[in-house]
Image 1 (tube, rainbow, N blue to C red):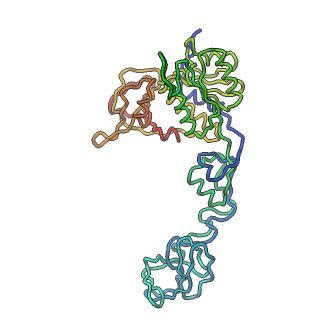
Image 2: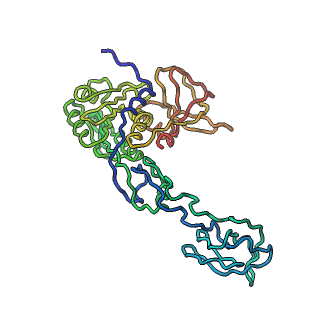
Image 3: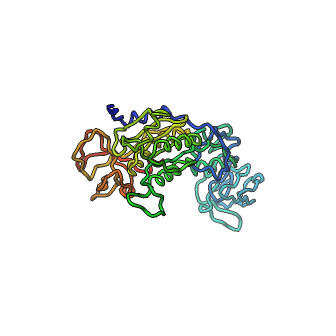
Length: 404
C-alpha cells in the first residue's frame, strides 16, 4: 500500500481547526482563581468606573476662577480617600488625596508640589485650568458598556477590571479534559532504576507541563503497552473520560506502532504524515467519539508538533480565536546545505554578533534531544526546498509567542 503524501503544515492546521469544537460547559470560580481561564459570557458595566469624579494627584481641589495668582486662598476642608465630600465653600480650597472624590463646586486640582502653604492658606505657584488632575466619572467604563467579551482569556489585568466592576465570582468555560498516553515498553518512570534497553519517560512530563501552560486539565496519564488489544482498551477508556486524547509514539509504520492501527480499525484517521521536520509521523482522528492527536515519539518532535499544530487546535477548543503567528525576521548565523521537502523548525536563539542580532542554531538538531530545546529560546523556520547561509533572513518564533 503506497504511503500518503506528506501534508503541508497549513493544510494540517486548516483541517484540525475545522474539526475543533469549543467546549460548552461552564463553571463559576472565585475571581482569585480565574487566572488563565476563558470567560463563558459577556460582562457588562453595571455602574460607571470610576463612579464619581476623583483626584488623580495629592493636592488641593478648588474653583479655578477663585484664584488670584500668588494670593493665598484658605483651606476649608480635608477629603481623605473613601470619604464623601461636602460642597466646597466658595473662595476656598479643600485638601484632597489621590482617588478622593471631587467636592461639588471645585473644577480643578492643583498638585501639592505647585503650592506654598502659609498661615492663611495656600499660594498657588502655577497656572490652573478647569478640569486639570481630575479623573472624570465613567472615564474608564460607562454603565452599559461591554467590559469583557465571552471567550476572553483572563490575565491579571482582566482580573483587575472584573474587580473594578464588583465581580467576585466569574463564569468561565470548563477546562479541556486531556488524556495523555505515552507508548513504548522501553519507557520507565523517573525515580526507578533503568533496565537493559530502557529509557526514562520524558514525553509524559513534557506534555504535562504543556497542558498546564495551556490551561488544560489532565484527567488520565498512563503508558500504553506495545500490544494491540491493550492499546485498544486504553484508548477506549480514555475516550470515555476526556475531551481530547494526546498520544506520543505509536503512529509511525513500525510493527509495534499500534495507535494508528487501532484508529483505523475502531475509529477514524483523517490526517497522517506531516511535511515538517521534526515531526513527520503526526496523526489526527477519533475513537469512541473523542478526538485524538497522535504525536511522534521522539521528544524533540513532541515539542515542535504540539507547538505548531496541537496548541492552535487546543486554543480553538478552549473557545479562543486562533491568531496568526507574527514572528520576527532575523538573519541566520548558521548554514543548512541540503534541501528538504519538509519545512524545518530549527531550535535556535537570538544572539548579538557585533552590533547585529542574529539567530544561532543548536549544533545538534536530532529529534530525540530535549537539551537543544532547553538551550534555545524558540524555533527558526527553514522553508521547504531551501538552503540557508549566514545572513539569510529567517522567520523566528519565540517559545513565549508560541505558548501565548
